[in-house]
Length: 124
Image (cartoon, rainbow, N blue to C red):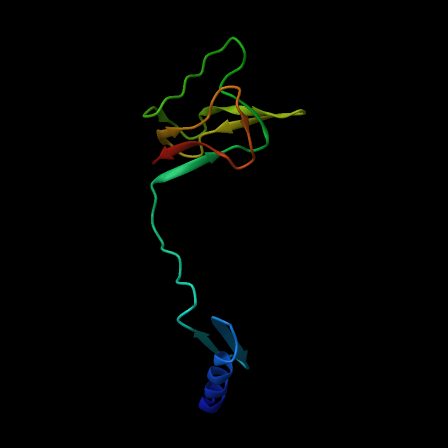
């Protein structure tokens, strides 16, 4: 890439309030970041898998007359029932996506839940 062009782009950046700029021309690409550019978010590994509410509705652990007690530290297998979310028109079944141990249970019987709300955290 032409160094004169790089110099021109760098000088132009100083006259703007941009923190990042990417320029591509004929397969050549330059990326310029100033000190004001936000750092890349930290990457980390987590051994917990969130099981979230599939819809807005009311969480139930078991059908009436049945007892399904889910407690922290309990082992679950992939596909095990974890309850359901009842909406006005449908019951959305919740199952364990992986085998492991329930590390955190935030689901409460009869509680109204929002779509995407974590109900359980399973450690592989």
